Length: 229
Image 1 (cartoon, rainbow, N blue to C red):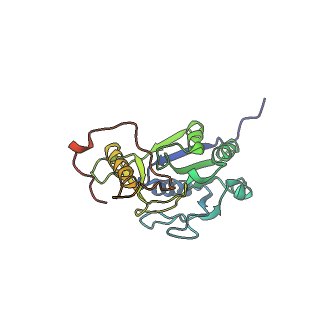
Image 2 (tube, one colour):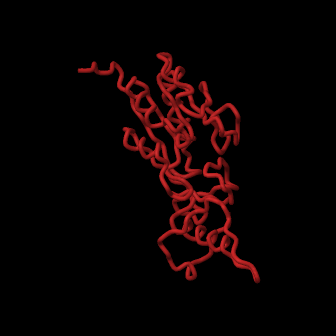
Image 3 (cartoon, rainbow, N blue to C red):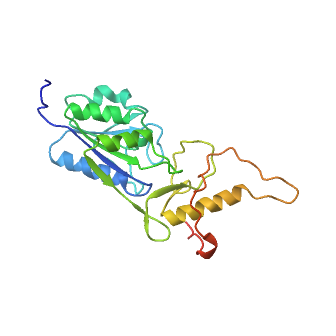
């Protein structure tokens, strides 16, 4: 039989759409561990340079105060996060790491406290594989919602930008948080715009990853237009 851990580890997953406060909650929970005397580090996704090249930072410019390491894969910083000098690992933008679930589980087995902030789904509402796995591994789940333009809770992320890249790191010009009905409306408007047929021409087929039209077809004509961003 294996020996029990002298200090049990844990995995907390903070997930939701964009603009739901995931990074803010990540920094709050990490700071709470710092106040408890724990030795904490933050992991920043290397390609995310929207607000700061070095620090984990929120949309409203709040920065993490502890040591931060940048990585494309968690394996890149394995010697640092598995160090006996580290108690707590905070991981931002968890959906981008291909080894998120496996590494988080290994850290927890080694007695580490792991706190992950990640999107709940892609812009086309398909799951991120690593986040789905982590839902099963995590013993704490914090699901957050944003606020839709229409004023109700937003649980989906909609891509406003026309781009062929599957991974597009961006802000409010590229993405918005939507409730279900507003997601359907924006989805239909984008679908219609991409299939406009001009006189004497055929509709162009754009090589982009559009938000796939939902199989649900509510009566859009009887509804009010989508609120402006």
